[in-house]
Length: 459
Image (tube, rainbow, N blue to C red; front, top):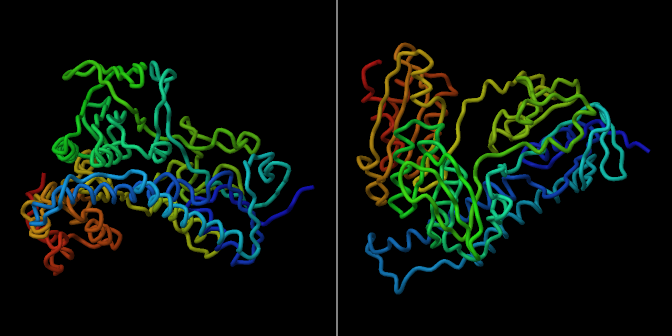
């Protein structure tokens, strides 16, 4: 027997539960299907647990620097990873339980726990249950890529999910991948006490960023004792007793690294390969991402895709915005679009990198005439007072329209200070409006008008 609903939501990540709340409040009968953990990547294996552990790593780092601030701590600083993990688990569990409880107590919402599979464009099976609806929303997220590297099948390797279960500090963690996820874990475990080596195939870290940002992040990590191996063109693995040999073909350094643990952080793939999407006729791109339009509709009427599985944003904030776009169009007669969104994200190394809009490189490639302003963090009072002077502020503007095109704040508070720039970009106001603002002293944000006042001549 088929149970009829007005809407079916597959996946209880960042977009799904909030969408269920809006749909049921509008009077719809809704089914939510979750096959594993409520809350999705962010709550269980992403933002929440990793940033909780990063906070523990920062506490250890600051304790080791206590003497810099005139504070005496008796004895060496040690990390109890079991205790840090317990704190992380408690925070994630509380959030996950809250989402599950909310959904299961929601009027007009039925929760199914199991694996969803399309039987047709409007029919879904979950175990022995058969559901149908005119509106189906896919919010299934993604997972770490495990590439077919030579010897990978001969070793045990970690991903961003499994590394969170460690309760003993690795002797030597080898991180394969020098981008956002890999670098956050690299610094975290270095501060926990591990030796850490980052192996990256490209000639520099975080290729998406400008070269000066990449170089500054590399300098920050190396200053903490993290080894960086770039241009590793032929990565391979082999067991060596209880340890792992990682072979690299780099222009500099030893040809092999012996580590106790290997973390693979080389990308993610959408969880779309086992949903029976072919039965519904839903189109995918070559990387398995669901193809959607500017309002997140798939090629099949009545089916939408939200969050990481649609390839239009791999962040918690973009997934939640996907919910807002769908709800606005479906319920509010408000034509919100993905293309209205300005790219913004952060890299949570310490100090963090806050990013908004275009990089300088992207702005130059666009053919615009641009002006660029920069200010090193060691010229900012707030950073000096906190003893955290690494990094810089960089802002890029259009020389003709005076529009702010993008910004990078690599430094203490950069993940928060970037929002003053981002808000001005959304407001569509010229940089001169922000330049004439009067921020609070002493903050990192107070130097943003100064940077805008020191823009270099147009190029």
